[in-house]
Image (cartoon, rainbow, N blue to C red; front, side):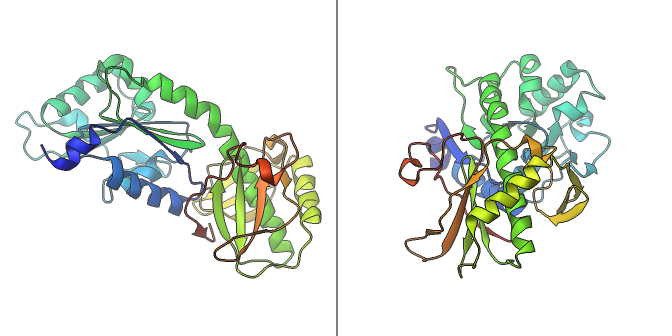
Length: 317
């Protein structure tokens, strides 16, 4: 057994902030693979709501892996794992399947039997919606990943965690991520009206940060008021294509178009901090926005609210 595999066996539980844009999610998947994935892991389970970014994360973790289906449609049919050669020759070394999707075509026990067979033959199986197949499978994943407002990476043992434990956490928190992402795009939408186009996006818990190399000449209270008007109008937010959403009937660029609330009125307690933050090292000017926090933003209390957990920036989302 390799040194890296022995080190992974000591890993219990890690929590990362879920990125909202696709480029950041792919990059996060690559980092998870480098830091937590062992070459000896044969069963990788993902848990998260539709649109949370499971397929995009997998593209970062396993570059080149042909996903049997994703948000864009069906890629491979018939399902390879259901047609394994008796000898094991001329078959994939890594299988992918989306349990929620495949349960429309197969019974759960059929899928579980195919997964166990692949595992017995030393194949790797990557499973989305792992919580749905776990009761029929009889074994937990070697590496279990939950995606909500945060990404939970865990290596289950006899003491857990169970897939339902991860599901309970990530399904409860993803609403904040959807609200924050939509609020982020509404602020961007209003900035474009002010001819402000160039800034970086950062993810924070319960909110977002927009960072500017040159401070724009705008009033943040007025900006907040304009965003709140859009929220009050309860405009529908809908998917248009892989890089655009519709805000009402207005097209808007976004690299995470499925990670949104269905209408602006679903955003709770939106507010902007009314002064620009100054990054201590880069000296960039930053706008901080938060959602679902009823109290007025008090900068000295942000750490106690656990808001300032940064992920890598993605220029232009």
